[in-house]
Length: 313
Image (cartoon, rainbow, N blue to C red; front, side, top):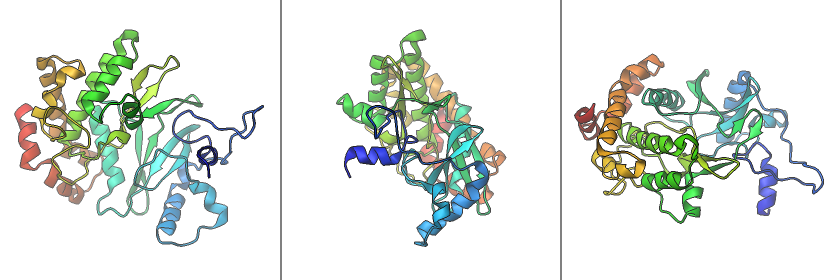
């Protein structure tokens, strides 16, 4: 198929605002039918397991797992309609831990550090949980134009890095009320949070920008925020002068590129560190099992991260 055919068959529920019509006179996109509702989450999960096992899916149920309509990523997911709004529901992919519940707990923890995360809810299944995340690229039934950081930085001929995206916000961010300054400083907090929570899957497709009608960029809500549990010691994008090394010293080394004075940057690090210090209690309050907390503590509370956190927290 051609590129336009791929876009057409993906339907109008794809990420972002682009639409493809089969008519030059009228807007006739491909219609995928009504979206599943929250009460069908368990059924969708069973269909996902069927596909993973190579088993056939009954034709009458294929509407529940239409492809091409989600935000990408590694884990199985589908679109839902909840109270007339579109949500993405993500399932576990055979992980040893209840990763959807871990993601929900991490996203809500980040909000305590003044990080805007996409609205999420944990969905109980017979086997663990799924996580439902409200789409930030839809508003009032309208599509919003969005770019991943990968697309935005590549278009600007910039390498993939936190400082580089912050500077792109400085140049092309929303000027009204100096919103771009708030976005730059929040992006710094997100970077620090990812370091301290061992979220080393923070690559350029896990950050996005919303594009206004006058082509100004706004930092989208954060998504796909959770500890990876790999203890890599480096992030997926550049942090500072020491490249992608997962250290607060590295994060602070280029804090001026996030519209922060040195003392302001240290204050932001302290704010995030204090929140992360209470991660076990927050996870427990979200219903995360003791076994899963113990597993992730091996990475989040290992000396490499804990000593950095304690220094500022």
